[in-house]
Amino acid sequence: MTAVKKVFIALSAVLVWTAIPAASANAVSVGQSCAKTTLGTRVSIRINRKPVIVVCRNVAGRKKWIRAAVQTITTSTTSTSTTSTTTTVPEPVINYTDVVDPNDPTLHTITIEGMQPRTYYLYAPTEVSAESKLPLLLGFHGRTADGQFFRRQSLIDTYVPTENFIAIFVDGSVDQWSSWNAGNCCLTSTQNNIDDVGLVSTIIDQIIATNNIDQTKIWAVGHSNGGMMAYRLGCDLSEKITAIGIVGGALMDQTCNPTKPVSIIHLHGNLDPTVPYEGGGKFETPSIADSLLTLNKEFQCTDSSSELQKPNDAFRKKYTCQRGAEVELANYYEREHEWTLLSTKEILRFLFAHPRKA
Image (tube, rainbow, N blue to C red):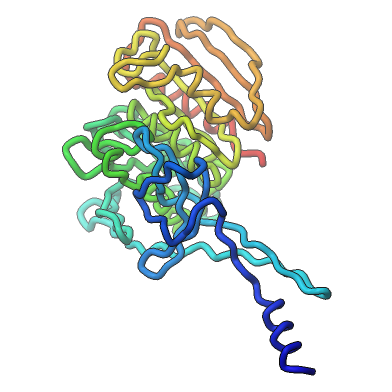
């Protein structure tokens, strides 16, 4: 065999990974403008010598490269006259530590490489068998509050022992506003492009690694800015989040492109002055109807029923979507920007009834 032929065979057997076109990976960095790139474009770059996938998103009204929530990408294939092979770039390892407070076993401090330490509170049932798969609920407070405030407000943790699920209450940004980067809201978390999606994705991975989690039932629920964050997780983390529950929130990222359908229950007061039902207000939020259908726009949701329900005095609307996802809206009359015990009961009822089917 000639030397030239040997070289040809060796080269033809090499797998060549090709990043998504339309942007040069060498010219891309997290936080940099992607104004000339199509929204949703994904590119692999290197941070601290590790491969990281970034995606072009609309952040506070500007197109920027941000770290992708789902760190997977499919490679191209090469073939010779006799072979054809496909490979996938492995998901990069995210270095982090998760430390339990010795004085409060519910309090965890998670430190992710490149991010400020963040805290969350974990509540789990004590009387379940090791074989039992548990749903996972992540709760997100409103702006200026914290995880413990939302726990006391919602009383979700009181249902943990009887309904057998794990509840986590995450603290927002480490500043006076304690907010979430939910797209075009709110304040410093958005302005500083805090990677709250990456934070939540890592927390979910940590909980799955240390508990027996039913991955058809991983839920994000939130109030106000926390509800906006739940919407964003439904958009950017649909590979992991199966359903979301919102009170007084809205979808702030109109570039929402989930890879899987997400079931949604949204409860809203018709007199809400902070996040108006019809949209607008201080934070220029979209209407609630637009929020509901934008998230699942690719999955052909159809109106299945509408009714005025008493004694709760709520106009209730339901949609059925492809692949088993469902959407439910309750517009409560004479209600403002509030989470009540009824909200908790309604949301838990819906979440347990809608595991991911595909």
